[in-house]
Image 1 (cartoon, one colour):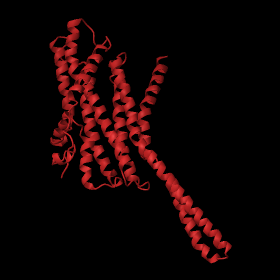
Image 2 (cartoon, rainbow, N blue to C red):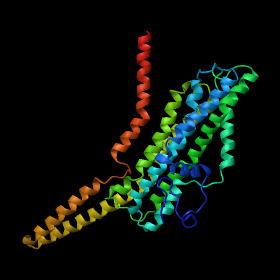
Image 3 (cartoon, rainbow, N blue to C red):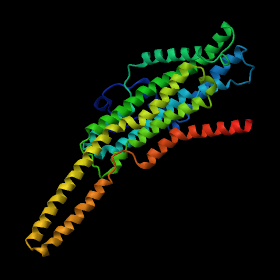
Image 4 (cartoon, rainbow, N blue to C red):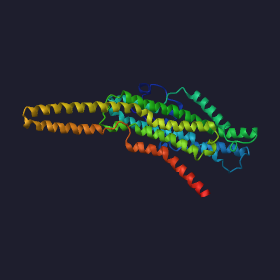
Length: 357
């Protein structure tokens, strides 16, 4: 049976789909079937939101026709970006699963079912997500700075009509991403726990899911840094929006570390077992060496000496085995993504203050 190239839908859903997909998962599957895998749909969604919001402001006379509200412009990015990020991370999850599969020890026929679970969220949560998204959208609007949302009651109603679709889309997608990505990362922990053929000497499966966790973390960090820089005017003083920004930062760090923590403990234990086994073999070979020397069988000690060298070499290899399931460059990349923008921002503020004085 075949699985869709982008969303993992099996050609025989009754056989491989243990639950019906959520609406956004069906939407992403439809997008993937469009020309160029539908990546152009996401900027189109940004444009549609801008047409609505700016059209409302122009029609109500809140802004002169042809002028642009940059805050709405920045806000229109969140929902489509989140959808695009989920589509991209689904592809990363699929490739990571393929690379990890030899470490499971399971038959290949089980992989499409796992792939479906990794890239498809179950349905049934839509109304509750919309309620939460609406509450966050209204809260974010009401808590927004008066420099952005100002005016009398009729003016604020106009602004609400302009802002609400964008806010609702963005906050609802934020909740959806937390659910979908959280599900993906729980599956990473589960497959690491249940896999039967983990080989500490084979790093390809061990590192397989580090791409997913790192890029998931970076996707969240990008949202946080974009919110605090380009869209900073909306954030500062808006406790609802700041709350979601800090949740995004926290989710980014947890996404990188938490799903891989379990396999780290498993690798530590297996490395310790291998090291103990090497030490036992060295002890046995050492005892054999002494017994042959004591017996005067010096000619036969050469074989023991060669065996000792071989076991020592294996012990050194065991010592160098990794216990963290990500290669060094992945860790450096994530740390850079986490801290480099902060460093650049601090330096820019220092330079700006120096120029000002």
